[in-house]
Structures are given as C-alpha cells and as structure tokens.
Image 1 (tube, helix red, strand yellow):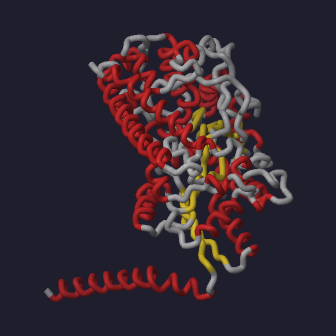
Image 2: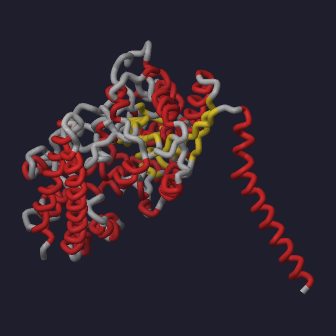
Image 3: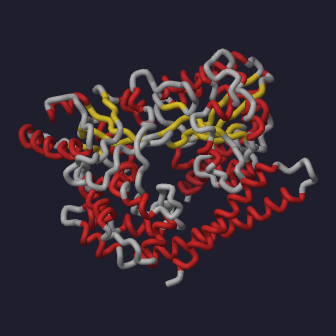
Length: 526
C-alpha cells in the first residue's frame, strides 16, 4: 500500500510539472518574447524538406534587418500532422499570420483567407531594380497564378500565392551507373531504362551484389505511373475527347466505360496496363508497401542505381549522398520504342509544374498588411533567387533560373499533349481508385499479368464507377447552387458596383457545372 501511495504521488507530481510547463509555455513564454516591443509575424508551413527551413530562416532574418521593428517566426509542422493542425488553427482563430494552404478546399480558403486579387494587380515593390520591376505582382509568377485560381473554381478568388514548382525526375548515382553499364550516360528513352534491369542483373550475378535498378515506394511509384502511363493514351485521347480539346476528364472516361464505348481491352488501355507491369519490374518486390523514407534510404545507401523522386528531394541527395547525383527528366516511351511506341505521338510536355509552397494571409491575422508585405518580399526576384539556390528547387517566379548545379530540374515546356491515366485517381470518393489499387498485386506480382488483373478488377468496376460518378454529380449540383447564390448577389448590387467580367465568369462556370451535372446523370443509372 505504501508503495502504491508513493507511485501515485509521483504520478501526480509529474502531471503537475507538465501542467505548469504548459501554462508557462502558453502564457508566459510569448510575453517574454515580446518584451522588446517588436511586432511578431508568424508563418506556418509543412515544408520541412532539406533546405526549406534554412531558406525561410535566411529570408526572415533579412526582412528583420530591413524592418527592425519586426520579428519573423516560422512554425514548421510535419506533413503527416499538417491537415489536422491547420484546420484546428484556422477554426480556433489561432493560425499564423501567413499560413500554408496545402490540403485545404475552396470553402475553407474562402472562409479563412483574405482575397488578394486587387493587391496582385499592383507591382511588387521589392522587385525594384530587377527584371520584374513595374510588372503587376500576379504576372511575376510563371502561370499568372492560374494554379491558385483553380483551387477556387467557383469563387475565382486568389487567396494566396506559391513559392515553387514541383515535378518528377530520375535521379541516378553516377558511380553505380558507370560500374553497371560502363558509362555515366543516363538512359534517354524508356527502352534504355528498361534495359537497365538486365544490366543490373548481370552485374549482380558477376559481383555477388543485390543492387536494384530503381528504388521504389508506394507514393513515388504512383507519381511515376501517373507520368509514364499517359504515353499509351496519347493517340486515343484526341479521338474520344468529348469537348474536342485533347482532354478526357475522368467523369467522361467513366461514362465511356459505363456506356460500353470503351473498356480495358481497348488496345491503348491494355497497353497501359502492360506498361505498368513492365516498369514495376525495375523496382524491388513489395515496393508498393514501402514509404518515401525507405526509397530515399535505399538510394542514399547506394542499394539502387536510380530513383524516381520529386524535385523537392534533390537537396536531400546533395546534402546526404556520398556520391555524385545526376538528374534527368523521366525517360518516356518514344515512337521508336519496340514495345510501347505505337501509341505515342511524341515527348510529352510537363507544363509549368505543380505549385508548391502555397501561402495566404489569414483573416484573423493581427498584422495583415505586414503579412502581405512579407509575402511580397518572399516572392521578389532577388529573394526567390536566393531561395532557389538554398533549397535546390524551382522557383514559381519569372526570370529566376533553376539551381546553378542542376538545370535539368526545370520543367520541360516543349512537347505534345499527354493522354489520360486509367486508374481513376481523384474521381468522386475514390472507390474505383481503391479497387484498382486493391487488385494491383495481381498485375505486377511475380505470377501476375494483365488477364488476372482484369478478371479481378472488372467484377466490381461498374459498381464503383457509378458510386464515384454519383459523388461527382452531387458535388457539381452543390457547386451550381452556390454559384446561383453568388450570381444572385452580384445581380442585386446597385449600378456601378457589380463587375461585369466577374458576373460573366460566374455565369460561365455555373453553366459548365450544371452541364456536367446533367451530362453524367444518365451514366449513373444501372
């Protein structure tokens, strides 16, 4: 009994100690930080990859030198915790002045972030003396912030800007490539990449090693497939594009299958599955169960000749790799490929790359003008150039070159339009994509193949497609109602207050969403 009392007392003492620390941390510690009477500006983000926190830190210190009355603090949150953390902060009114917008939908963005449209029409004062001097702030970004506007297709508001662009690259160990192939010349085509499998096998047999051609993991292999497989639907897409715009949106693809006009035995779709199986042989067995860190560790430990990874990982390889890393665009099938070339029109253009580092000013900020000023500072030509060199990433700002030691990170802007992917990722509630992933092992496993996969996948395909289309239609219907309300509000404004261009945009979007709702309703019926 005496021992139990002592243990209980010790437990209560520990709880009181942590409770006291929490009170000090929340109430007293901030007061101590502000005793120099400087204004504290906080920026919250998930960008914890190599070089990113250091880049933010350097930019913060430089901004403080320009503005002695300001202190800038960054709050870096692990990406696995980000979604829950940012929503809690926004709802609780405690979000940092500048907050990242990853994983936030249009409703949250419109409710919690300040629209920047009018401010983006003005030049960025921090660009004075640079190639971007006098240019409207929005036009200093490579796509005019179209990627950000796409996050708010109904309202059309620009609630943030982004710092960088992401794309995929094949990174390779120059020393290992030379040992395995006799040359440091990387594969230029998919046929040359797939030949690496046999070259690695021969090297392993001769030297008793266990090298893999490409380090793989679940998420990165999915990115790889998303980039590679549309090469097989390049010729098909223009012939079936509903709007004759070279694109086949996922709802239309689903409708074509449900109507019986397309199936997975269509040669281009079957070839996509064959290519997926073929490229999977380059990666170690069980790669779909591995995480990003597993793949990076394998490459850094020189257990793999190459890795398909994001441009955001390059700084990790430079910092932690005990070897020289080469970088090239993903080798895709060309028209001369003996197995997969007959579906190809040409090299696929990447576009500008995916937006990264989206930041906006929260409505609850105590210093919104200061937060906006720091956002301008971060996206100025000079600071963006320095950010690029430190982080080894591609800037979203015009006239900022790729890192000096890796020009191949820059997106490929020339080329043909891509085809479409066949796994239905991002359609509806994701039921069909989950079905595809559930049976993927029957396609890529040692005993797998296209026919075993189709036998398992097609059993429930129609059911999951209808469920996903029903979700998509419900969202389109909801968006139409919301747009009706916005249009009604604009029409109720007194003369001179309504923006005719904004009204026209809302009417166009409303028509598109309503048409989409009506077009796909028939396909949902069994």
